[in-house]
Image (tube, rainbow, N blue to C red; front, top):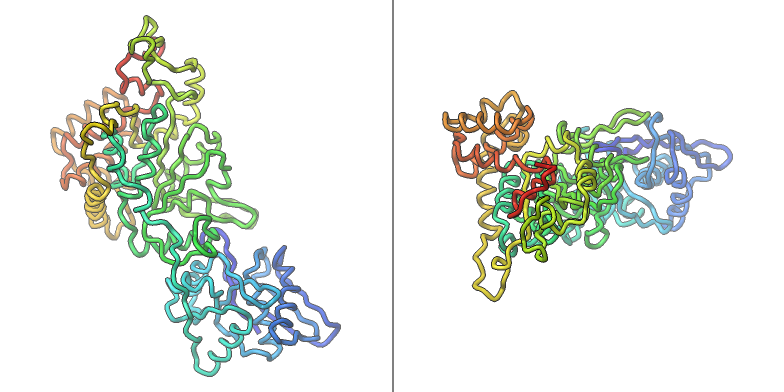
Length: 546
């Protein structure tokens, strides 16, 4: 007798056949098939769950084989499949042919929720599996794809009862799906652009980044609003399509319980908004990229079709920042293990915020010096860092990483007149109006790229840029002059065209005009050097950096 099970591994997972054989001999319970850790311990949990659920465990030689035998099996989600396979072999319960089962057993017989249910349902449907038995607390997650082809059990007795119902009627009993508690926060909780005064250039850059999926770097002194506006980016992003929502939700299912979720923290509804991930700067490379003994998606994969926000980016470890280069180019993470390579999706948008120097004050005028510069051009600044410290701090980015950032913004704290609440408040444009423009531009891109596999302008292949980014004669002339003057690399050349394509889409223009090119160049020209912040300040940079 055999039961199908599922083990999360990478982005796809593995369907496992749990085979049971009972023969006469000295009573024993053996598990073969490279079972490790929690899988080996399932023997004791299954025995206790049998007894406490009112079933008699066979007093014979029980052998469980987990096929394919050459792959290591980890996790407790195999408890329920093992129990049902033993019951079928012993004649206690009907056979569970072509049925995928998941669940961890408590000693009382209660079934605990497990991770990867949505991924298991997707894999099972692709293999033509008839039905699924999953834990009650994972019912809302399974219902996203399985429809009426599954049932949810709260304990071992309910799972056995479902097999008898299936034998009599030919189908599993209808599941009872708990009311969704809301596992992911909506974009409304991220704040509104209208709350932030000033910073028009930064807001415009975020709008372009949201519309085209472009990577972005913002830098400047503390208090300028870098983080505050960055965390409002989800409020203007376009919702995911149906297929995108299922793929994102599946990755969150594989990652495990949500730390900010309600109840158990497991997925309880479809994630329809682009994810926004903001890991702390102490995160390890494994936490960002994914992997581990039992490979799980990292922050990059959890930001799939969404945003990975690195606040205080230079404070991240150098190996973490440099590891971003390949995923930004390939849109996939390849994790190599002795058992074989694993591929995790990583089509994310990178947003980095940074101070322009270690002390954070580069670009702020020193009021005691009268707001001007002395002969060195540096005495009027309140920065406490030496030029060598500033260069060492900025060098963590590396030119190869910065070359993949299409949009850069250098900002200073807003003026007092912009934030003075006693004056008549300036009417700032809210997220709703910006989001409508972004959605219109995204719909243009979805129509343009239909059937090509391209999602956003940021992903236009180099070979198709000439076709998909037509320019007027004035635009070509302006672009060539700017490229020759600023010395852009080949990647930067294409990046500016992609950004200009997005600006044209926001203006509902099929052809890229000169003003679109010039704006794209303005958003690209800064960021290679921390002293670029001085172009936003009313003082001159130090002479040694001129």
